[in-house]
Length: 244
Image (cartoon, rainbow, N blue to C red):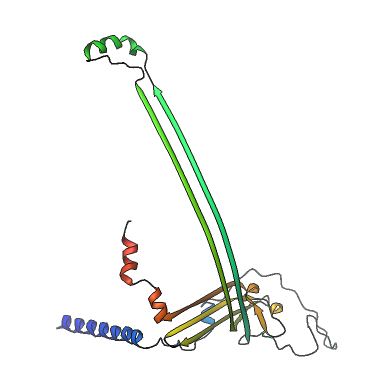
């Protein structure tokens, strides 16, 4: 009876999973619920090499504070929970051409002169006119030719808003952000995380991706078009197990 119940539960779970996959295949991909941006930057706190702490000189009667940029309030993101804009402009190109050619030929012959006087005896016993000079011979020839080339060009222009998720002891900020856009049955997803310096944030509260340390940028999607471009599970498994 227990075996029947277990089997029935397994079939029910399988049917539910099949229904969920069928819904994704028939309907458009579902947007991901809004989550804590800290999970994008990582579940663990970022730990990086820090300089020696410096004591700031206090001047309570002065209108100017050490390290201040102006008398007015700075509207740029600087605290946990603040939002800033990240401009992603990637224009990379790489071209590499390699040609390798190698050729080697070798020959070796080894002989035993008269073989301690037994050469005449062996010639009488063996038919024909055998000779022990050379007794051993080796010939080898090897050659290889290789040609390789890489020609890659990537261009990405995107803008995304990120949230400050942590502030390190030296003042650097950890950011994380995500963006999802669904057009018809195709969902595009953009993820970004990294560590920035507050002084690298421009006056319009934006920062370039080139000023983000440990930057992690992911741009992809899921839906009808992405499903066509991906290989099926059977082919993926076959590619993993085939020895050829």
